[in-house]
Amino acid sequence: MLVVSPTGSGKTLCFQLPAVLRRGVALVVSPLKALMSEQVSDLLAKKIPATFINSDLSREEKETRFSLLALKAIKLLYVAPERFFVRSDAERSQLKRSEPSFLIIDEAHCVDRWGEDFRPEYGRLREVREKLGAPPVLAFTATAGKEMQDRILASLGIPDATVFVRDVDRPNIAMLRLHCRSERRAQEIASMLALPQLKGQKAMVFVPTVKVGDELRTAMSAMGLDIPFYHSKLGTAWERQELVKRFLGQSRPVVDQIVCTNAFGMGLDVPNVRLVVHWQQSASVEDLLQEFGRAGRDGKPSVSVMFHDGKGRGDTGRLKFMAEMTVSNAPGDEHQRAVMLEQRNRNIDQVAGMLRSTSCFRKSIRNYFGDSEGRHRLSLAERILEWVFGTRAPPTYHTACCDSCDSTTIKKHGAIAYVARVMGGEFPRLGRK
Image (cartoon, rainbow, N blue to C red; front, side, top):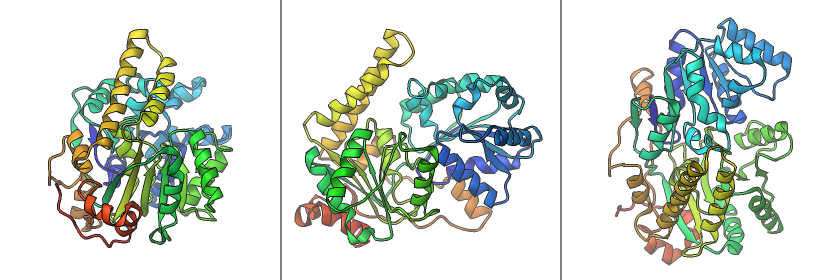
């Protein structure tokens, strides 16, 4: 089964509940150590036996956790896909003998986005499933268009699986496409981060590379804003985890604003992210939705700002160069790499076209994912909450729509004032185009 449902809609509950109710241990394939740690901590707090195994653990600690697995003393075990291919015969054998109740793929878009090059083990999960005895597969993601859904299912070896797709619209997030030269972006971002409406709230600024992130942090530091930058090459694993905890409010001093590459925040439950800024366009519509979907998980008015260079080719050129470098090192023959590069360039051009367009941005995104206007069905998680626990999901506020629908207001007051008014809850519900 593949479930495509927006960020914050309860996908985690949709696999944790079946895992708890069914006999045996569910193996959860998770892309990030921080995500594993947070979900396991949350489960343990609820008295649900769960653990994770990754490279940060000592040999002794790994052995202890594998012993719990052998005794079936846990209900969920979180691992990265690379764990199934480690050199240790003993580790691979213990995972193989676990006879899992489910093979759960969290953040399943990684199968398609990373399986061909960056993390090839994601492309070998079909092989993993066969070695585990073909347990039922539950795959979850917030972002996958029809083509990506088909590629995910084909890669996992379950082409005929049931697919549940929920409306991707996030009506509480206003979407602002901002045409701005790259040398002006740091100043614009600094102005947004200094808004009083952000006090006590969270903000995330996504950058495409470590180089761009370092330059942005330096520029904002010169303007008096000391904002940390999270990326995969930052210090030690402990330092990276500590920064994540500070952003989550689990460690001091708390961090409310952060510059980061796009893996940061994936799956983390941070309800009060009010502002998400994209330093440049994303490489695909799925990536774009994954990033701005970090905003407003609590349903309150939030803003996503996407910088672009209009008809310029700086942003798209940078992304296409990065795609070419990545694909050139990917496994496969020349024809396979050519097809891969063509697909990535097509995705980049599609996002660029959506950002340059003057039509409703929200409608463009919904059309890409096949959503119909006004459609809203309760997710499985929401039904469980209502039927079993007698509670309802937090109310969702309709806020401003996008720079096209709200162009009159933006022209009158300016982009920064627009962002401030939306985050401050001062914007009335507007008509949709």
